[in-house]
Length: 346
Image 1 (cartoon, one colour):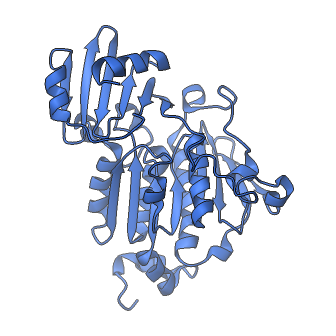
Image 2 (tube, rainbow, N blue to C red):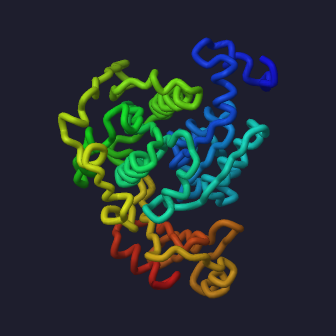
Image 3 (spheres, one colour):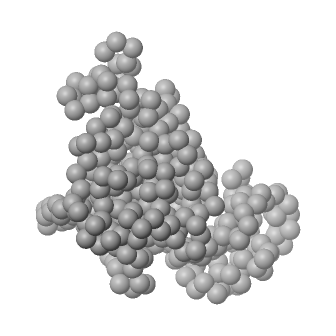
C-alpha cells in the first residue's frame, strides 16, 4: 500500500477497491445534500472511506427529535443550537482529519445548486423532499454527474443510482412530485434508525463504486426493502428512458433547475415547522436583529442563527444569516408567513 494511508488498509484489501480504487477515492469529491437521517450516515461513511472532499449542505438545525436516528449529533449539539451542517462537520473532522469537510448552511434551490455541485464526482441524496430530488436530478443530467437517490419512511426504503447517459433518471420513474397526502411521510408513518442505516449504507456502496472508478458496476435497478418484514426487491429499470420518452433525460427539460418549478415555503417533515426563504437571499446581521427583537420575546443567538421564542401564540422562530427562517409550532403556511413578516420583515 505504497503512499496510501494505513487507516484504509482493510478497505484496500477488498478486491473491488484495491490500491488504485483507494487512490481514486482519496482524490474524489462528493456532495451530500441534506445531513439529517440518511445524510448523516452517508457523510460519516464517506469520510471514513477517505473521500478527498465531502461537501455537506443542510438548511436545518439540530433538534432533540433528531437524535433517535441522526447518528452524527448528540445532546450538546442541541444545547448549542448548531446548524446540522456545522455540527456534522465538527464531528467528521475528528473522525478523519486527512480529508476536507466543507459545510454549507443553506437551502438547496435553483439559485445555488450549480455552485454546490461544481467539481464533484457524485451527488448523494440525503433529503426528505421530492422537490429537491427533482432539482438534483436536473443538475445531474445537465452536468453529467452521477447521483444516488434514496428515501426512507417507517421501516421501508428505496435506493437508485442514476448515471446520466447510462441509467434511467428520477423522472423516468416519477413524472412529477407526488400530490400532497398521497405518500407516507415520517409524520404519518414514523421511521426507525435501522431502516435509515441500511438505506444510507446501500447509497454509499453505489457512491464508492463510482468514486473508485467502477461506473460499469452500476446497474439500472431500483432497490426496495423493508427491514421489519425482511423483504428485498430489485426492479429492473433498463430501457425505461426510451419507454417513457422521459422529458428530462431524453427531452432535455430542466423545470426545477431553471426555477419554473419549486417552492420557497416548505413544511418540515416530523417537525411541526415551516421553512420560509426570502425571494432574494442576502446576508442578515443577527446582532442587529437580536437588538430589534429583544422586547418581543426570549432571544438567543450564536454565529450561525438567532432564535426567538414568543408566547402568544407559543412559537419559536429560528432565523439564519441568509434570511431564511424556520417557524416551529405550526404547519399553517399563512401563519408562518405572518410571523416572519411581523418579526423578521418582508
